[in-house]
Length: 101
Image: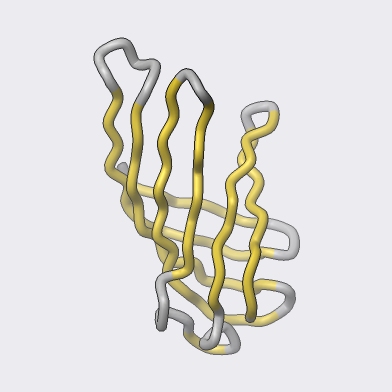
């Protein structure tokens, strides 16, 4: 699956990437991995960096995490490190960045 996202807020920009996912036969558990490259501004700093995703879900809940790929930052985001957590509320995805720019 291709990823093509637009971000607004303290993370403002665009990303593109690819995702691979799998579900069990009952479609009530599964997981995914993905990579994407973000270009734009984070807390007002302009640049780009790559993100690596890991996600899974089952009856006990879900985990969706994105980590900045070490050394992938460019521009004013060249030194970026950290991760983003994805919250899904009302069908919308929200991203909380934790790290250093």
